[in-house]
Length: 484
Image 1 (cartoon, rainbow, N blue to C red):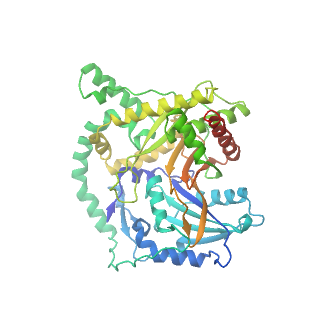
Image 2 (cartoon, rainbow, N blue to C red):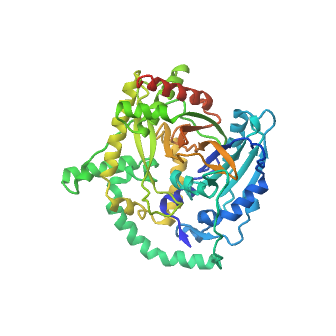
Image 3 (cartoon, rainbow, N blue to C red):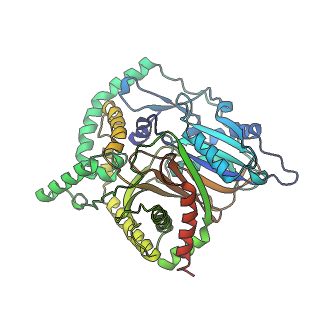
């Protein structure tokens, strides 16, 4: 068995009837060529059955500790029913982009069955031009953006001919412990939890506003800043503790409303070479370009509906802290809160301001000791963590937004990949909408010469994801015009 980390457990505890912390990808597959077989559910199911040992995280299910005395565990599902997890659905003619997006939003909004491994594959037939799509839906408790894409390696081939996959070595499998055994395990862990909570608190309290999941918890920022001010007055702690960090004010927007269980999703593909030319011209990072491009798109859209605040919006930007040797699966990610220069008219200035903001946020993050990151994972005893996480999820909408939106950028395969012989034309991400983090979120996957953008919104938010997607394309062209 493998126990969930605090961040993984938070992804479960923070769910409610209005928000499911799930993520997905949509692989658009080219129409079959001459002599090429059509991808069917049966073919996809057999492919997964043959290769699932390459992605062990997909064969694990949750086992909970009674009374929430400890975080849940992953255990191998020796009765894994692949037929349940691999599904298909057909669009009605003409099968356009908006029909696909509507169906994807419906599927992603539906909660996963927590008694089974937390994933689904949906083969979507009937796209225009004889194409199809594969929706890979995962729970955020089991993966972050990087580890989620790593799991795609099970499906992806480097050529249409596929590859030879060595069969799995048969294992006896794990026996799922009884509830009484799990209760005993939880009770036995309590004494150690107390000591780790006290010690973890001493190491991590000054830095909680830089660490997940506390980073997005209402009230934590004020506590951490007060402790750092006290440390400064008492002249205690290292230099990192004395760095105050930027106290960002999150402006109120038309997105500040309770979310619903329903979603809308849109997507667009823009040239990667164009973004790279901007990166080279201004000496910035590709992530800087993505975030600044989104700032331009949001600014333009909010101007169109006459709702642009005078102050810059605040964006949550995830960053991976995953070491190369880390096992696939789980969440090894922190988040930065940065000003999104939506109040700046000049596209060049928006890019340079974004670069400065992200650079400063990364420097602040580097001042956080590894001991603080480790200590934060033990700060709250699991028996307290579960109700605290649920309370934080409920309060996040009442306490005001801790950010206005989420912007993420995840590197994908640089070369073309194939699924059961069908070429993947584009690889679009589907994120989640979280209470207190604005009414919409955007993720970019870089794939095979393109930046594939997915924008998800609450269905009832004023944000039109298709308009934002179009404005993102225009915003990148505006920057590209400055970098001939």
